[in-house]
Structures are given as C-alpha cells and as structure tokens.
Length: 135
Image (cartoon, rainbow, N blue to C red; front, side):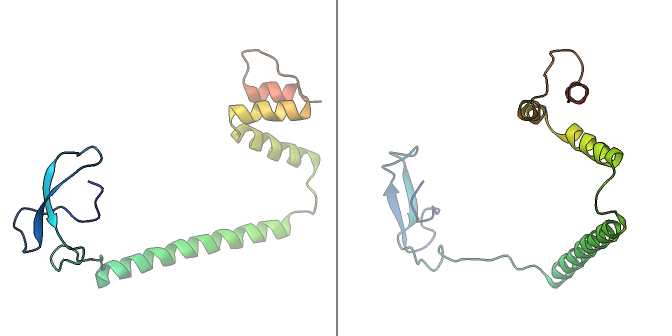
C-alpha cells in the first residue's frame, strides 16, 4: 500500500474507515485505515530513547574508539618524523611491490597498459608477471 495513511485493524478507533486500493500490487484489495492523517491513535510518532545505561555504554565505546584512533595517528606521526625525506630504492620497491600485490586483477592490467609493460599469457600470477616484465 502506497497510501500515506497507516493500515489499522477494523474498528480500532472512531476514525477507521473501509478503503479500496486502486493502484500497485494491492489493486482491488479492501482494507481499513485511519481516515485522518492526524489521528490521535494512529499518527503518533515515537522515537527510541536509549536508557542512561545504554548512553553510558555508547559514550564509553566512543571514547575507546577515539583513543585508539588518536593513538594510531600519534604513532604514524612519530614514524614519519624518523623517516628520511626520500626513500632509498630498495625501500621504495618494497612499498611498491606490497601495494601492487594488494591491487585487484583489473588494476594490474590497467597498470600494465599505462606503463607499457608486456602482458604475457602464462600461468604465473599477475604480480610475478608484471614485475618481471617491467622496463
């Protein structure tokens, strides 16, 4: 039913009336609903209110999550301070290889096309093929 009125049981309140659906999958079906959109029985809006115990548990989990995120940021910033401005060639290759291994199959093929690497149709993995065919 795509009507804005809510379906109710027959004779649930004085505003309940018999209706006929003329549109949608329920076309031709009779149903009862509240006649007024502002029916005091059926148009009530309720909102979930967490209990004080639930609110405290949520606040505690949020505080833990925030603490973990801030700790990660602090650790990464400390590591960045100790790193040199430019990575050495072996370190850069290790990072690039790790990133390439995490990429999906389609992205491997895109990188091979972009950089003009040869795509050999062998039974080796894409990672091994891409890194053995690079210029």
